[in-house]
Length: 338
Length: 280
Image (tube, rainbow over all chains, first blue to last red; front, side, top):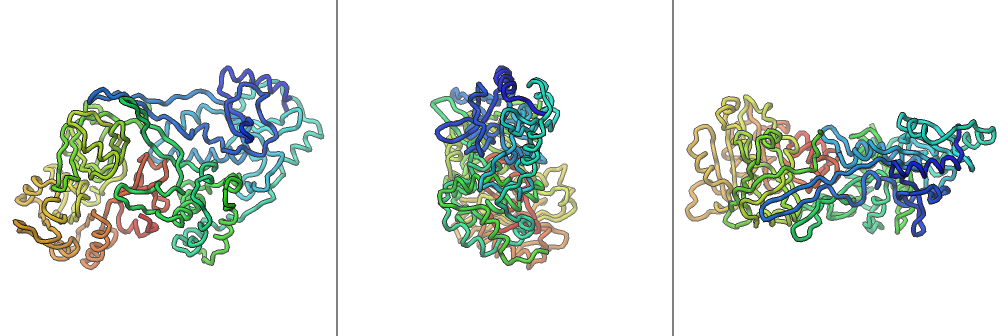
């Protein structure tokens, strides 16, 4: 079934009264996810956003609490604020990444309310990829350019209209208010079939990577892998599944707030103890952590590889480090897997 | 409503006391402001909490009191960074934030019916003190066999909890061995590094667990001694330190392999640590 873009656009604009509608918009030469007031702002033909949409659920900078000091006394205020949001137009890789983040922000003991209160109030409208970038490799990560995992509604761009697929109850409820649906023409059905059967041209083999990494902590592979890395963290900040954060304080005279900000395992201070000891004091150990966490530790803890093949880390790296090559390197390492 | 694990409870600093002659370690006594907060703060020896010095930040510290000591919790903290410096300078009566208790704890159930040798070096004695006090409590003492504490510091002035140690010296329920690295005037007890003294005074490893906390070098040289004495890795426990922020297993920095020290630790047996990469 399809919905015309004209009708969809009107509904989109109406939605902004009830929801914060976040969509891909152009800013400073890049496309990123921002609150949009009108469908006319939405960028349609983008490959993918420069920064991942994770910031909607897990902002780069977020107040956890605020406080006022009065002599020896303290008044603390919870800064958890949540509104209803529609996240429109995210790519299937990023929708899948949300499912991975869900596994991080809730574990056997704790649930992160700042993340999950937003998550539970967000409807995700995925937009399949009609175009595929040379750095995309989602097909190797169990996803595809029209994968519906993680989306509540999945759209496929048909030019003047969208093909609409309902994935969840949340999606069904949202769709009910969007407008009338119509049948696809044979031509449109052909577009849907093409997009659905598309695969990324770039591929990696991750079939044995977890088992190999089980035996590679002390492997000489890590001695050289990191060499050209500058440690700038662009890969982590642009990664839709990277979730490490710092908690710090912003203070004026008697008032302050506790904030959390994105942090990254590639930063040397990330693991520095008060004593001066640092268990990951070398770039080598930090690269090993990045690879191990995504392709081994995360699998052991959560059952999935923490990479969706979006390729942002490849595009964003100033020295052309390429995670696909890093994966190939593990594949080539001479390690016997049981 | 579900509790927000990032929101600290407010507690009052009722005592800020210097423990050591180098003036680098203070013990903070914090008082619960109400019964409800105390009820919600059910902890066991070995657990830690995130302590907030508002205006400076928060940092994780092992709880030095035992759950058998109601009304208060204590932390003994070295002055090394922003938060610990602020805490050291804090006036008594100031309100602080506490999140916790966090992490796992010493396996007090598993220890039941067993002898314990508790080996501590320097100021890593805080949660060991908690465990010893817990076992010495009249409700628990009968659950455990012989308790031996081997505690060392560079010199006598650096030992924590001196009054309590003096009390343990004469307490028949606990066998205390204190040692210092080099001879000092007026010191009549053991002189020598922990591994050496452990070899001399440790009880038989039969039906005995060892719990070791201290600086890395001390642990490194004590473990082979315990092995020689017949302690299997399953019966040697330690507590690890890591840089932490959230304390909830989410922020990503305190991992050793797939385990988070904040959530899956800080207490590990040597058998468990042997399964993990040596990155700590």
